[in-house]
Length: 367
Image (cartoon, rainbow, N blue to C red; front, top):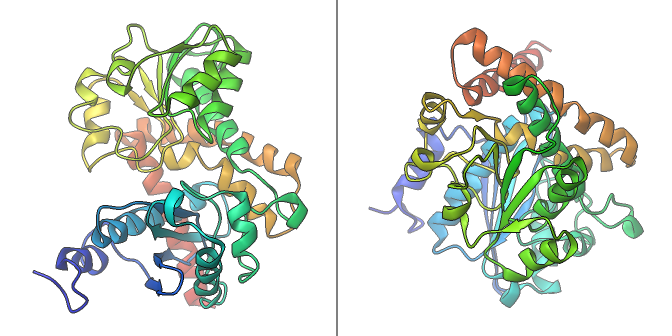
């Protein structure tokens, strides 16, 4: 069954009726001249203007793109709340292979659609988009972050994203092993692109034993040529089965933790940069039942959004790094709340974020 737009009806059910819905606004964007097809999803503006990146990806169909935008936007609400930012959650997806269809005209058209929202949504980089792309988008839209320093921006946000994940790993080590040091710990990273290769640098510097994999051979080669002690494995299936793995870091696309991976995962901790790592509700309990400590993805990967949010107020790297360093304390607080409430850490993080959004919305209604 389809709705009046021709999209599968379950998309609208997700938007209006499911626990994964509750979004304030979803905008479908099309510019025939440039070939742009995009979805902008605003989940919440309770804490302030929605902030989230633009993903450029060759989705199998439009319904898949809408569903991804909805999930990612919702995740940004929780991420921004836990990062202590005065921003709600939003996300945009551009449908298509960026290697084939990305043009200046398409990005400018996209910028006009974001600008039409009048500041309700602030965009930035994500999978498939880069600083240079945001510079183009910004020519049509002042609500654009993640721009180059030459154009008044903060540059690559993956640096602080990786730093935040590193802090989440240290907090996980502190909670589980009583010491934040990662020295000699076996750590497996799936995806060594934008964020993953920066994360490798932190771990190698601390003396961790690092294993990596990526679907792109050149990404792996860049790491192993720079760090001869880093070990490459052929794929994620092999990585999650490495003997004695202390921490597994999913740093590629979402859904990395599912019914197939969790039962065979050898790691004691999962802490990575990818968004939406839990493939479906219930995976967080499966991890807890196996005694695997899960550091909620949207908490530990918030370094990038901290950076792009700061750009709106005049970027200062050291100020941002100091705020990203607090991810260590936030992660520990989530583990403590989870233990106190007898729930998995993912559920504890959700409760804290939802309370902040609820309090902000109540305060706004009272004004």
